[in-house]
Image 1 (cartoon, helix red, strand yellow):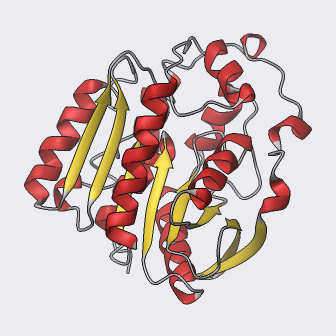
Image 2 (cartoon, helix red, strand yellow; image 1 turned 180 degrees about the vertical axis):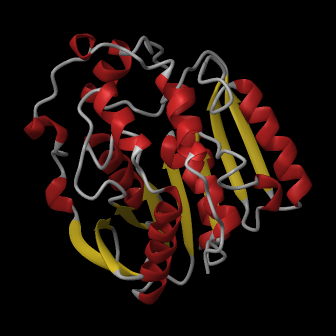
Length: 278
């Protein structure tokens, strides 16, 4: 049961640490139409609704029915083409996973940094943790004996928070994001955690090298199995390699391209999830 209380300053931490670096004008962001934001592989997903408390939310599922489950948490953009690309890749990793994306923004998607920041600032963080918990439980009730949680950026922070706040989680992998102390203390993690960061990430206190080192110290204190990896020469969101994702990263000043680092990160992700979920 989720029993944590989070003040509004938690969302301000996320919005300030990311927003300061990404405070670009709308004109500096490439024009992604509503159609282009939809993943070309939308047809691969089954859309479901999950009940929690007195509300329901949409989620998107891809993969074998009886496979180990992985909840995939969105970046601050929302459930867009990139997070769907990641979920499809996860479902296709050996030996096969059932990936589920909960829609934390309830259908809204940010097309530029201003919109994404606005959506993130309005996120109900305790509610997001409840969405993750309900997603984990849905997977366990629908064919997945074990379930992990992963996420990128905002989703990475929430994934790591789930290792503290969602007891049903069996393993976590977070990419370039750490939770504020008001949301969750990784020193209290109860599930194994693997985390990935870019050496050149400059989201101070959220996903820079200092944040990565702080996370590692807290995970050591927790006593859970953990790995923290830092990728030399890589910046924030280095995993985003779709043509649209590359264009968006470049528009934000993130021009590094390191396919070897991407492959290594996915290989480590796969090994971690196979070890704890299969």
